[in-house]
Amino acid sequence: MMDVRRASERFRGGDPAAGIESWHALSFGPHYDPDNLRFGAVIACNEEHLGPGAGFDEHPHSHTEIVTWVVAGELTHRDSTGHETVIRPGDVQRLSAASGVRHVERNAGRSSLTFLQMWLAPLKPGGEPRYEVVRGIADSTPYALPEAGAMLHVRRLAVGERTAVPDAPYLYAHVVRGTVRLDGELLEPGDAARLTDEKNVEAVAVTETELLLWEMSAF
Image (cartoon, rainbow, N blue to C red; front, side, top):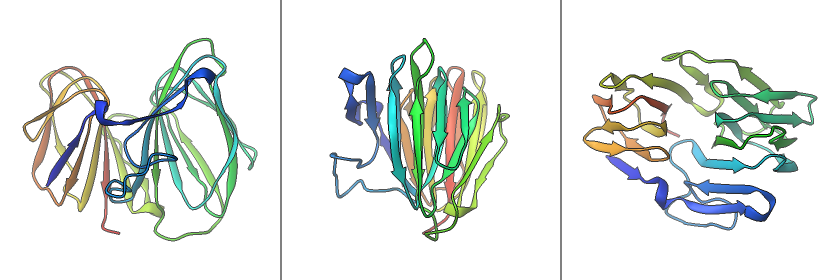
């Protein structure tokens, strides 16, 4: 089964007066939909837009795997374990909140910042917080997230290029940029598809495309 969710269907959140605009793909904060709480391990997929100087002040997380993908601009991250980094397009940032961590996320630059933040539920709660950044991850290089039974695949496709979509109990596909045809459905930036037990699915780029694919085991 494939369930397509359009960018226009996302719930709008954030604080526009503070330079924060958020678009939520699943139930998040004040937006509650009992039929859209999670998909596989994915419990949040937020598209965040921060104006220059805007950001999220220090706040806590626990028992969550947080993966961040910058679309445009630069994201400054600081957390209670002592990490302070700047994340740019092409980098994968992962914060394992585990038993508890606090962090700050801010646009310290002069240009607008857009990033995608994906939260995944761990297979087991607890443990020590961990932080990792992979700089400039290459196309087709999988990023393993064993704590959530998940694997992230980054695909950058030229016009007409095809890529196999992993066979998995759960597969979450998000179009970062470009237009792609997935199993007959045309997907554009911000669109997502949720595949359950699908096999032999291909993605075909209609334009130059950047595509994130979460391959997940059953939970």
